[in-house]
Amino acid sequence: MSRLWLLALALLPLWGAAAETADAWQALREGRALLLMRHAMAPGTGDPANFRLGQCETQRNLNAQGRAEARRWGELLASQGIERPRLLSSRWCRALDTASGMQLGPVQPLAALDSFFGRPEDGAEQTAELIRSINALPAGEPLVLVSHQVNITALTGIFPASGEGLILPLPLRPQVRPLARVPAP
Image (cartoon, rainbow, N blue to C red; front, side, top):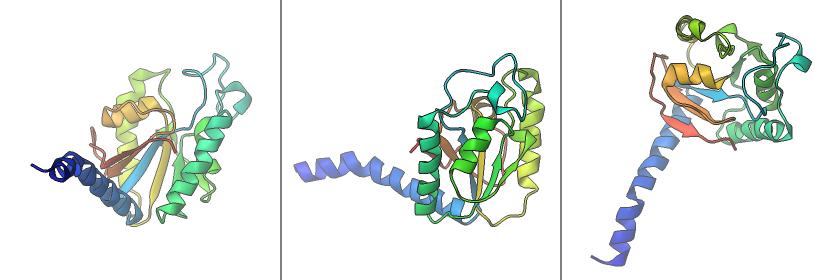
């Protein structure tokens, strides 16, 4: 076999992955999929003991890297033709700041996206509520969700990095397999 053939065979899986990713972005643009992402970089784990919803000074917050990641997510989405998605976010400040930092429009808080890290016993019911809430939304517009590692893992079995996104097919289902994984830009 010629070297060119060997090179082509070696690159074949990459071409397939690129086509799958392009199909995933197209499904997101058409509202046949959604982007579920973990909030951008907010150093630490869990929440401080004095955590209060609505009081950002009591929470882990985005650092400079996280704010830059949020901005780059907005740029990436816009470059993919997703300029005015419906943005839903956990009510935690680091998630809200990630969503608003994309600068793609208003952000709607959704309690079903809130972290249950400190209350793992609530995970199954909250995940079921998220699925019900998302599947009840009108179809057809791009949808971006910002949540937390524990929520994404409960839904997909995947442990995402900070700022990582998963393009998931709609309707949403338990243990859904992503159409594509998108690293933090």
